[in-house]
Image 1 (cartoon, rainbow, N blue to C red):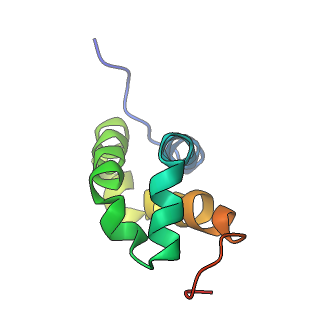
Image 2: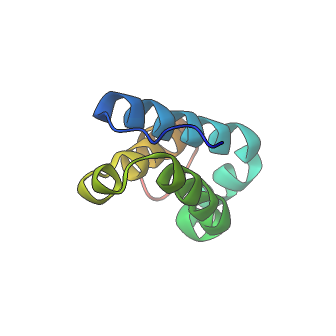
Length: 90
């Protein structure tokens, strides 16, 4: 039996950040390459989409449709945390 759907913003944010953290942890080289070449979202397209599908499967449809917690987590954890990487995008 699958776990119950997440219905609170706080829990959805935690899940989004956990998925983004895993994405960041397991794809460090791709992230560095993507930031250096200004194509991070192309390089990580499959991984980001896989994470999005996981997130979508765990939160209520209403919460998914009315929030951008997953996208914000990707930017905050995967992109902003790599601000030290030399890039023409910053």
